[in-house]
Length: 293
Image 1 (cartoon, one colour):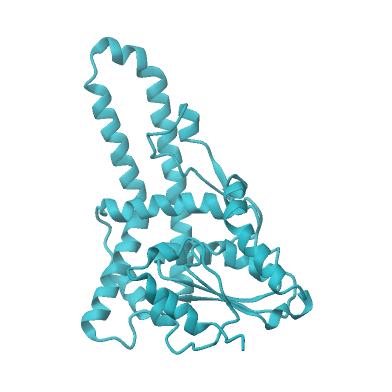
Image 2: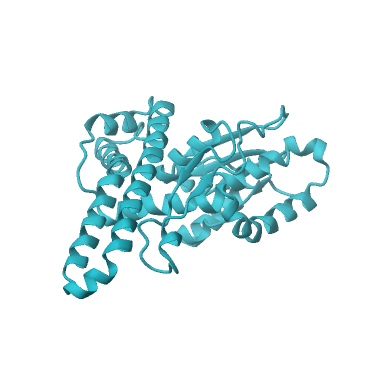
């Protein structure tokens, strides 16, 4: 449980950080609308002739952007609400939700909200299939080759630190392994929890992950193109199985403390580069994996 078993100062800091995550998710709509107001202000500084040339298509595009932003906020609200419902017994999270008062969030936290929307694209949409194939298939192929006996895979325990939105973790579950994902980011935990446990059908939700991106768009339509998720629904793609699946919230180095030789395999993708001290990660992974001899 986040915040329990810690001294008061550390617990207060964790509550404050948790509250900033909750606030940023709730603030997305206002943040997006403030960006639109800025775009309008810049447009109005153009000379009259330039405004006349651009006004009609640009005005229509801004209206569409607003609708996209509002839809993103509706999805984010559902993600947050379900997260607070599922993790409501956690002291830090419960306290943070109770004290949270909507206010402008920092650019750092808003960038994390926008990044979360884009990670949904990578991990849980048809649009992200090529990137997933390149990143995950190498790992999946190696593990399949190492453990070819499908009937016995439930005895193989796999830890996935930096589980993110849980797609790789879920693929390993579908392969028959017993898997635990570990994740530190509340943005990731809220969203993965929503996708893994709340979604009831494929492509149930629609987001517009690029609506606030003003670069690398060929057309207005590129900026407001919709993305549906999840392309695979865990709730309906989960047959009766002998293997286990769980998620563990917290810092990898702390949550694995005492896990000496507990895991058959440790799998990481998009994780190692988050280390402040890479050797700590490597030492912890080495200590956690079962001895081969």
